[in-house]
Image (tube, rainbow, N blue to C red; front, side, top):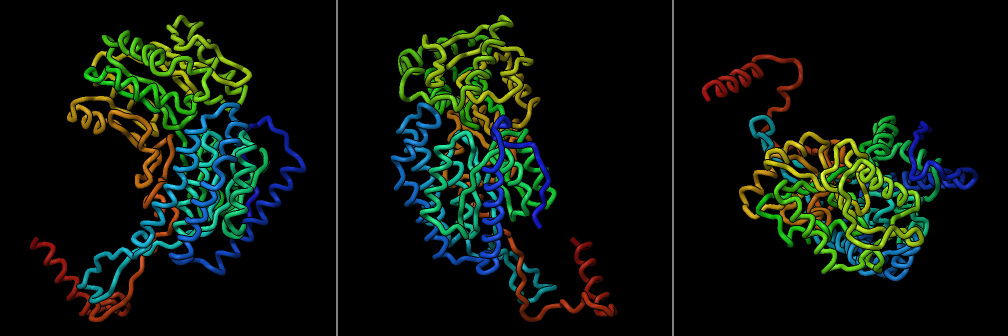
Length: 494
């Protein structure tokens, strides 16, 4: 039975609800019932069926290239076409191709030691079987990559999927619905769109697994609603990802990596650099390197077609407010572009905030915009302590020329993923499991880790010959005592 617990979640609590959401909830329930019935008819699709599904996904994402570009531009006001091609299209197609290539090995049973003393010639293995019907709640910042990328893992594992995209990206959400309706039977994959009431209803269904990508506050509500039905969850929740810059790496190349990452999607990326830790003695030099990079490599960036618009006017107003709060407190604010925030295109320049106090909102909240706090440290151990005193981040980035120093920094910190001398790339490797820890989430997708995340690892014993299984059955007597005494004696001798 579907539980109807009400939870306060959704992309925009201000959105009105009504007949549209009533219809959307009815469509969700119908789709869930249809897919559940499909699982009962065909609980474990074979390898060829799964490969066909992955091929269909790759074909539809590449076939809709131009319309995907248009939808992203409609929702973000400005969105670079090349980056759309690279991440939203090729990224998804690459994940589907990687899964199809390795599917046979992933699906093969994993043999485990049997313990011949008790089980004789029995064969023991783990078989990964589909979980069933999976709910996928995707965010607005990467509408296609974070919907269809995890979908590749779910299809590789043989599941059926219902996707709920964000209401902040109506053009992209409508296109996702059209694309998946073209590529798949709704009994296998479908999309539901709606407002707040649909968002509240979605995690209350008795899914076989639920993936949510978004922020920790809503993630907590999703997990609480899912727990009512004991639904396992994968939560990708972001957080304040730091870059630790060692004194041997305050260089133009380091700055190019950090700033380049921060400019991607105007900082609207869960694995972007949220703040930097740099040696106090090099604080001015680091700031100068950033301003030089912007002046020489990307002049006029905030008014260029490569600068993505902030998703809504409300989000832009929040980001401007974060900077103004810092300025009002007397904190040094360095704007790297003469162009001010443009309300028409919702673009704003990269802004440095130098040595901000920790009680500022931009140091307490995930920024999700083109603002880069720069915190000084006196000793590298202080930087590690600062990171470890906060919540465990989704990503952590170490810049150090000495490999031993880099390894020490990795060994003394904890994060969902990490990079050395670059940033965010851990989220772009099809074969590398991606996810968080603690407040930044739990679970993994991408590659074999995603296949396993959305599979049930079923332990199977196939009885052979020459076993002692019947010793476990009553009545117990001399034979059992002999075996136990022999085993305890052997253990004591060791």
